[in-house]
Length: 100
Image 1 (cartoon, rainbow, N blue to C red):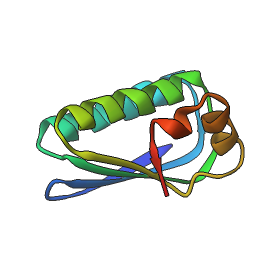
Image 2 (image 1 turned 135 degrees about the vertical axis):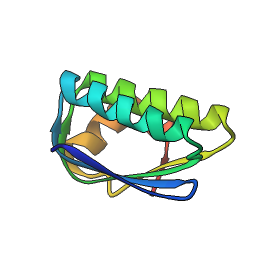
Image 3 (image 1 turned 30 degrees about the horizontal axis):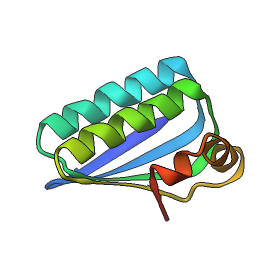
Image 4 (image 1 turned 120 degrees about the horizontal axis):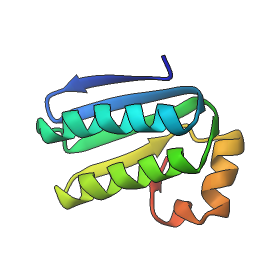
């Protein structure tokens, strides 16, 4: 499994692991949208175990960020490092996301 989601009340902690490609991004997005639709408004995504993310994965992050912001919630990326961090910076998404 490339991700896990722990939900407590209106908060979700998401752990992304290994490498995220098209199929993985779609699955993660679907799982997250379900919990958001169930009332989660605070999402913290831990990318410390992520080695690679492609453009569909970045698109998934944008879609989740947009949905959370629409609900006046908080979306945070934590532990971003290595190639995923470089891709986020190169695409200027570090200006869009809150990164810890």
